[in-house]
Image (cartoon, rainbow, N blue to C red; front, side, top):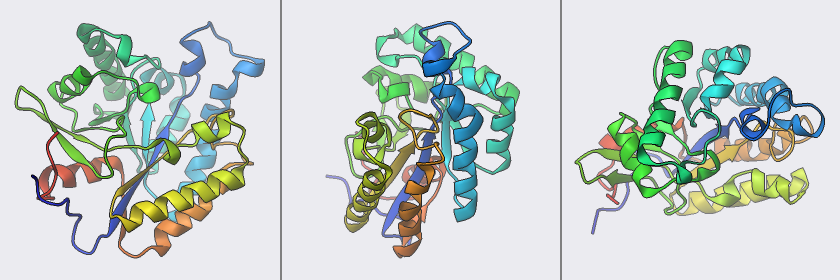
Length: 271
């Protein structure tokens, strides 16, 4: 049995603010551009919603992790520059919102390589973290990620704290779990009002704090099932205030939490 997971000294719990960009790539995967009318929710997120989230994070001095598909990176250079300039981490999310659970190993390598090339061109470096679009992947995906030099994944929902994935080839990958009630999509798909979403996020964080866990918030800037709408973005503020008010809460980008899990905590359990 592994030792209990240990956060840095003085830390009770951790929180990662993450953004699944989910721009036009969501719609364009299945249809041709341009995307007008009812199919323009990804456009809203890329053109307006992401700016709203950036402004919110700036007000609270937060550094988030943006998971962005490389197709959206190429299509929206201005918002990409703004995200990078604000000091947020930018992590991998496939190329065109692929379903990794349907791709053979060589196809996954090809998609990841294509995205990494875009990241090097636009940001000057490849990503160290990954989240599968829709969080759909297979067990082999994590070994593929580790082989390509990724340090962490954030697609699973199988623990309350980070853990280390030990692959059969000796490579390691950190898993940063994300739980469905910590994401905005299921609430807004069911047409919940922002007040319900806000209260749920605060309650979920409070409970996670109580057990010393990792709270991985997952937001989307989209106009349909995301938090980027001007009428919805303020619903996140009570949670951000709670992160400040709970003593010993470490709020950091995914990369920093993953590095601690790999190198700092004696209780980072293998899986």
